Figure 1 (tube, helix red, strand yellow):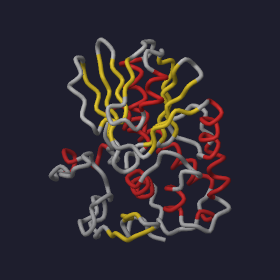
Figure 2 (tube, helix red, strand yellow):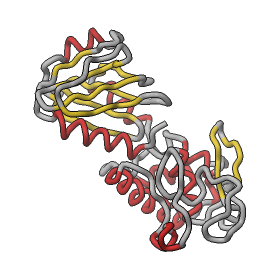
Figure 3 (tube, one colour):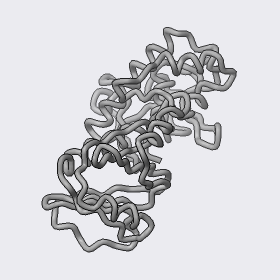
Length: 269
């Protein structure tokens, strides 16, 4: 599932291509046809992301709510658009660009009130200017749940996925099995600040890189990471490989139905 930086990048990409224009709106697949007919030719006035939720605003009153889920993808390109396939849930097209949405968990036309209800149930997003890290810590500091599980709870903090979760805990030497209530205010402030910087860089380069300059392949004289997800990381999907810092074997386990990765030495209890 895409992490929050991907959704914020999509919000920027949609705005860059369609903001202020009245794109043709269609649903070749047919599942969004009624809403597409209502939006066809309406001016795109806003794009917004909160966690893993994308919002496209039309006419200042109507919002398309998109959640990609596990299988959703967006393809954006220059006009002319290729013939649409029957897998395209939503197509936006104007004289210069097109954007095709396929396979989302959610693609729905909602009101502003419905949009605000979605925001209300989400935790603060490190990539939003209105984010309040203290609101997240208020929930974390009262919880016996592991910090690794809390970081993946979108009601606690929105946009953090499996990669950022594993990497920020490693970067701060925190055992993923520590209870949230055992995380100190200073540790939380450091993790939040780090997430803001890492995720902003993710938006900029459109991939996740979490290793510090002194731990890059060039600096350490090691081979670059080869993985479908791309990017240089410390522990994510590096199970049974040596830690870049201490040489101990990276471990993996199932936690809350997701694979957890950590270094038992660098993240000692």
